[in-house]
Length: 105
Image (cartoon, rainbow, N blue to C red; front, side):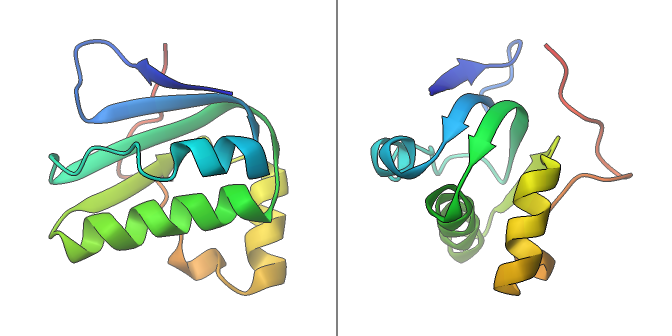
């Protein structure tokens, strides 16, 4: 999992790549900076995801919301969407469908 790849000059954008599973989620749990009002995370390069990856994104979102910010997730893989639906948390994911452009490298 490569998780610290900043996009362009945007200090408030991050692209995750590789497997977003238990091992990576444990390493990434506290790595999201809490400095941006709106932080964008692209999942375009994520090849696999499990419930720990979903929990990580929900944790980041909760912590940013609590700090007065917002987490916007783009390029959500279909597998993550299905996992969130099965878990009944799909409505909790802040995604950038229309209002925010997908982050490209």
